[in-house]
Image (cartoon, rainbow, N blue to C red; front, side, top):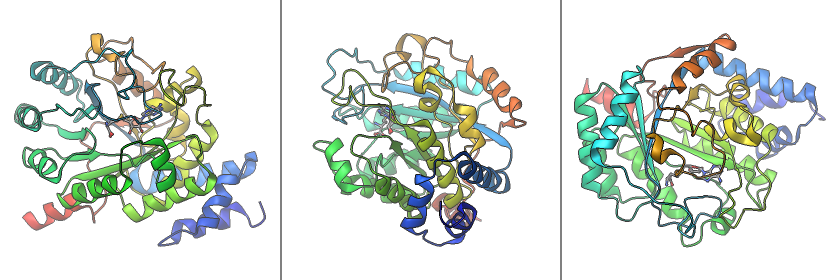
Length: 361
Ligand code: SAH
């Protein structure tokens, strides 16, 4: 690399909008010394802005029914081989109590984009979780109307995850037939305005994705000032149009996580289950070492868990719910880190949720 990577990283870190060429230069870095500088830089930013604690988010995948045809995703509606399911109200509540019983104080409710998902059903689930348990509720159920987002927010939902998947509008269009990039942006705006702590993210290694698009993703994260951000590797699923494509590259994913940490400073960034599943090795410790500070143990009840197959060979589908936290405590400890058992709310003082709180006082 011409100019030292350290100098470029300092520019990226302090810029109000980092230069596309600087980000691309870092994404092109391949030599171990350059990568070490990048990863150390990101790890220092992580330590300074979010500390050594690793937050846990217990995820319940309550339905795999989906109306969409995202070309990378195993839940896409063309996949006729997938047995679809939808947990009942009582099953979700039982799973949620299981999360809380482990001392985990965030429950993520995730599903495909189910046309038949009754907004009022989810409202009652949220209300009951919030009444019974001392937890934050994060929703991840895709694109819905502002009215529905508002209903769920009023019911007590605290956070919402909606990955942009790629910030490159042309690439987005090629991978999401029948969907609209504009509508996804509209959803992210609505969610932030309604006071949700908002998360977005991208897939790394998508067919047709260039270094330019990945650099654009980093700028998108900077502009969005999200409370949570997840760059995560694409893993090909046999029942999708991208079945024959290679998986996202681990090093590129780590570079994206490191740059995300450097530009976002205090966003919560997961070491995703996909990183833990790539090539059958658990690379989550490496993600934690280059900027990530969140792990997402799975609490989907055993009979359904393997059917939430967004990609194949997902880590821990055969574990009993509740097996993960112990394993994650060991993972954190092996790196000189520790599990932070707090709710892990947004650290952004500018976060809409924090502004709402400030106005309450
Ligand atoms: N319907 C919800 C949840 C989708 S599944 C929504 O649209 O937000 C959650 C995430 O899984 C997606 O955002 C996507 O980034 C990821 N995902 C889907 N297919 C994948 C694949 N083949 N490899 C890796 N991650 C994938």
